[in-house]
Image (cartoon, rainbow, N blue to C red; front, side):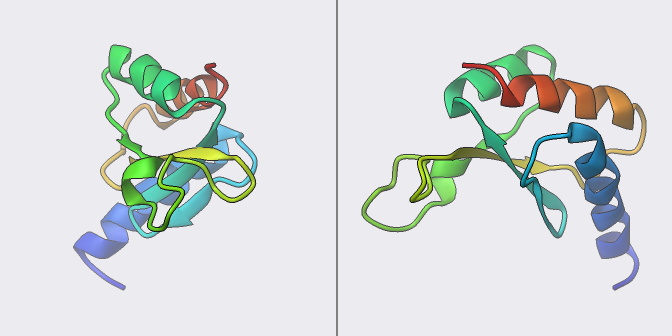
Length: 100
């Protein structure tokens, strides 16, 4: 990996540990973060100037409701461009993951 891909993956790996949410899954430039409520997390983050995507938008299959088979909801965070204020972004993400 090199160039832009390495730069992008670096942002995601820098943010992931600070989020503190269990089962945060890095996926290239993206992170998949479990949340208590997908919509509440998205609204809380938007109010802080952080845009994320609803996990339900990426689910395939008959239960296309933002939940995994175990009832967990997720948001997808494209964290690849995060360079400054990593701790602040991670703290906002962690707080949003608990929004219900």
